[in-house]
Amino acid sequence: MRWQSALAIWFLFWFLSLFFVLPFHARTSDEAGEAKVPGQADSAPVRFALWRIVGWTTLVGSVLTALFIANFVYGWVTADMLDFTGR
Image 1 (cartoon, rainbow, N blue to C red):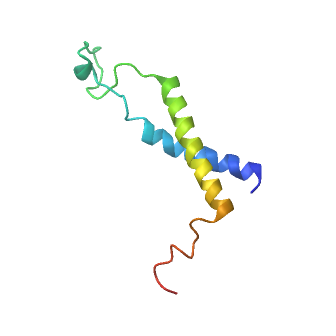
Image 2: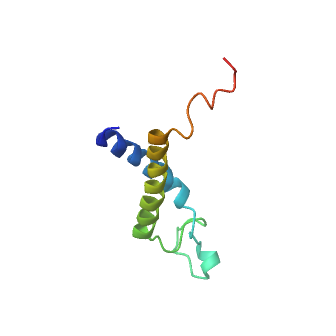
C-alpha cells in the first residue's frame, strides 16, 4: 500500500472517529450547574474543548488505521470470509 493511500484511509478514519468522540464528556449547562447564556440551546455544551477532542480523535483514528493496515498486510479478514451468499 502506498503512503498516499494510507494517509487517505487515516483521514477517513479520523473523520469517522470525530463523530464517535464528540458526544463523550459533553455536559450541558443543566448538568454542570451553570447559568445559560441568553439564546443558548438547551443541548449546547458548557465548555467545548477542541484540542482534547482533536487529540482523542487522532488517537482513535490512528488505532483504527493501524488495525486496517495490519489486516491488509496479514489478511486476517478477507472478502471471501464475508461472503455469506455462498457463491
